[in-house]
Amino acid sequence: MKPTLLLLAAGMGSRYGGLKQLDGLGPNGETIMDYSIYDAIKAGFGKIVFIIRKDFEDDFREKVLKKYEGYVPVELCFQSLDALPEGFECPADRVKPWGTNHAVLMAKDVVKEPFCVINCDDFYNRDAFMVIGKFLADLPEGSKNNYAMVGFRVGNTLSENGSVARGICSKDDAGHLTTVVERTEIMRVDGPICYKDEDGSWVPVDDNTPVSMNMWGFTPDYFEHSEAYFKEFLSDQNNMENLKAEFFIPLMVNKLICDKTATVKVLDTTSKWFGVTYSADRQSVVDKIQNLVDEGVYPAGLF
Image (tube, rainbow, N blue to C red; front, side, top):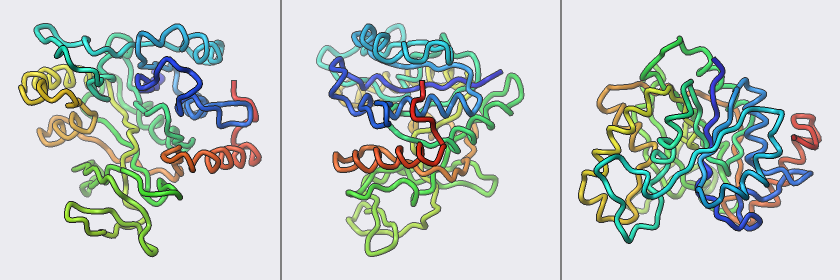
């Protein structure tokens, strides 16, 4: 069974032109998302599922989905504040979405095969899709609790225009993820790559240290774990009172690892990530995509 690609796109608003996720960066106005979908198809993915906001549906169908017709099956799922388990109500003052793992849960009724989750505004590069696609396609039928994460080498994920936030990963001798620690400031400091620790000190890390770029591989049983833990999350009064509390994928993954419920294989990739972290990054991304087109990695027009 071919794996599915699940794109987290609920952060998009209704003003189509003003969002970096839909900024035309390729030679014919292609978005970063277009390149992810093109690479996923090349890597053997058989279906694309988008998580968006319901109020963006008409625009999204007209301006995004139409271009993929005839290339790959596509489905839409919707993330909303009131999409909560029975017995729970959204606080009246809450406006912030419930987070990335809540978004993933929105696809539980349409995804019945192994799937990869990505951000819609990160350029992951083809090798990353090949690596996660092979892992998912090679899983035995009915496989459970055997997940993966693409571990990008931190040296391949930096911005030339400032620090970046990354989840620095540790793994055991079997290559399974043991921890993901979010570091909000990572950059080169006088040569070596460093992150700023809690004391404000710069701590050097090796260029090949794996980091999470939110590229995960799961099987459908992940939805069951997520539903159960989301109820725990919502039952915590602190999370209901904190109107910015979010149910993130790493929160769920860390719980499954700590409970020894699941393993998460850290997959190495040579892919070089890029994205528009700072406005000054935009031209660099345009140039990098054009170079890939010139080298024949991508056609000038994708869809």
